Length: 109
Image 1 (tube, helix red, strand yellow):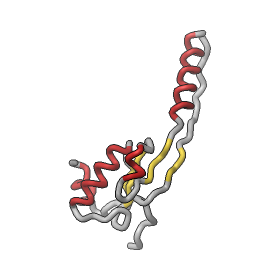
Image 2 (cartoon, helix red, strand yellow; image 1 turned 120 degrees about the vertical axis):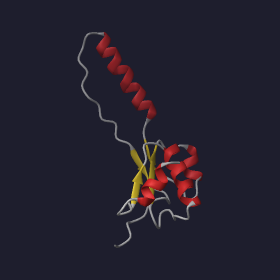
Image 3 (spheres, rainbow, N blue to C red; image 1 turned 135 degrees about the horizontal axis):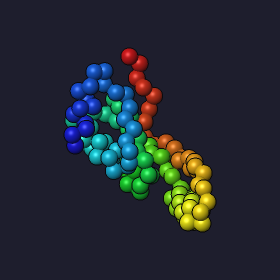
């Protein structure tokens, strides 16, 4: 993974990384582990999607869970509204944060 070396070389080094998906976060977690970086003691990692593997990683991955059913329902409703000639208003579907072992408070500088 090309991301890990760049993050570890950054000055100052980040205290946390928010990944666009759980697969990326799990890969980063593994890349840090092979480089001797402790998660969450040295750096925190979060993902998005709450894949089943997120709860089984070491440490378990903090992630954001979204309601795929609600997302699909709203998408279809918006599409039907557009097809009927109506306007589509924005919809906000907030994810739920699932806190697990890959995050901790930032260490004091």
